[in-house]
Image (cartoon, rainbow, N blue to C red; front, side):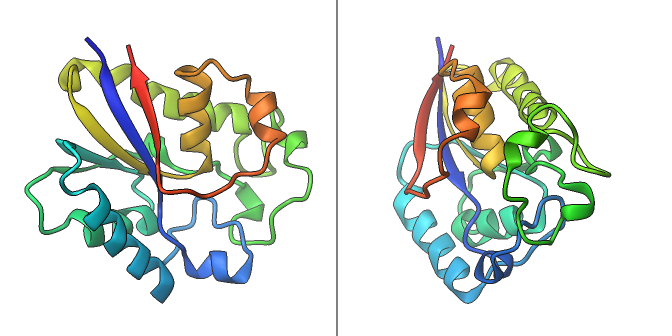
Length: 175
């Protein structure tokens, strides 16, 4: 058996409006983000999803609460689904060459590889309870890269060389 995973990014945040990389800061959805979160709920509510897993960072939790707060689906927070910890760069302009932090941690933070492997730990635990189910994961760039890396076997170096283009969900099959 396998697990169907639908991945959605957290909705648009105030930091997205400013062009800042929030990292491990909580963040807050913008007005546009709250509307997008409501649309996410309408789009996925009758999609066969039995549980919603979300990063514990506020912008992801707020997305899940707006989208699914009135449904009967459990909303489960998991710190391993967080964005990369940019350390001293949290909440600042993005560092232009993120490849330099593939294996070297951001000052006061973590490397992209560490962030992806952290989120990979979440994937290892899913089958213990959700085998044969369809679940939704709300996270960040590091979360999506973990899904692509561990499920699709895409090298992290390749993922880092492509622009992250937002869309209405990605689908994966684990197992």
